[in-house]
Image 1: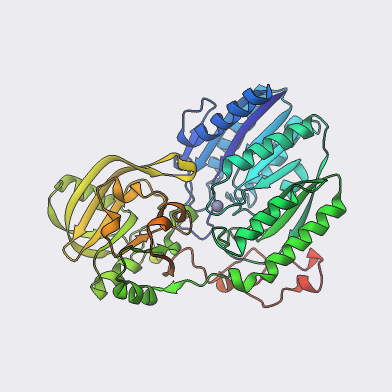
Image 2: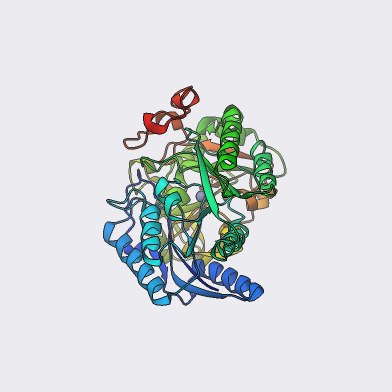
Length: 490
Ligand SMILES: [Zn+2]
């Protein structure tokens, strides 16, 4: 069998200022040279060799989350993906590695549009399998046009390849006529953030996996939704794919949705305020650092990674022995690079991208290190290039990492690669919501999630949506769906 693998993936923060244009995309035209595409080429080739099939690779494009994608950029990528697929036909299955929360101008549901066009091209006889990030908006258009859609189960996303292997197996079984997948969806009418590294979500993931072992159940997904994507079909949803048993799928999806609803107080985000975090840090005397997550400025959710609210508070409170990363500040990097290692200078840091970045902070710093090609371990361990990067320190003991490729903190090389010893710090401030957790939690005495002002505000009751239905928890205590499962209300 011939399996075509392709994808266009980004997470769109519809509230972010900077649009995502074509230059923001890393595009692989089928040769597997881009870092992001390599993952899928490796997995596809390995599975094809194991099963005696042919893996064929089309366009694979990825962009760091930011604002709405420019219409012409989306259409250019989509049309190339379709052309490459057409040139590869006939194929038996198409596997699409997507995100599920991509929005372009005039396309609130890019993935739905793309899958529909792929279906129109290949016809009803070819199996279409789709892998989504769990921060997706699972839409009716996606469900209708794909045979099987699987979302990651883990946040941080440590299971991308594992889910791809399942997708491969199920899409092939569909193409061979061994199963007939049907999908039942339950809308939880909730907006939230669910960390699967801790209870009760850890056990919930285990229960989803256990259900997949039941006869007739092919796959179970919980799409958490992306809170900062303002689209009509946003929100948390459970879907269950069964082998032709819609009633079983509906029952299980509803039961799992009810479990998520019942856990809502336990799983609700309860971040520390900046002041509370500073109090903890000032009093901290353990031999391991406190790790503070600056979630609101997570580049991985489309934020600028240049907000200064926590930096400002550290300066005002005179708290030292703290390392912070990453600040995306090209101007400051240029100034430091020209000054050179060892230079002492007055540097204006951060606060440039927009009002949610706060005010720039003026510091007297020493340039401690400059790397032209810095990197950190990204998701799945693949190196994520940070570009030209700089370590500056203040006399008060703040160590700041400036990087020129905007991204969130994931691997500890972000600091250690420049020479910063994390074990001797009182605190480590990482601009990330949760992907930092796998690498940083083992060094930490404790992880504190801090709610600074910013683009990724976790006050979910008050996100200024204009397009999605407002009948969701925690905006309302009891969304109408508890009394009336009909979705007509929204
Ligand atoms: Zn995600």
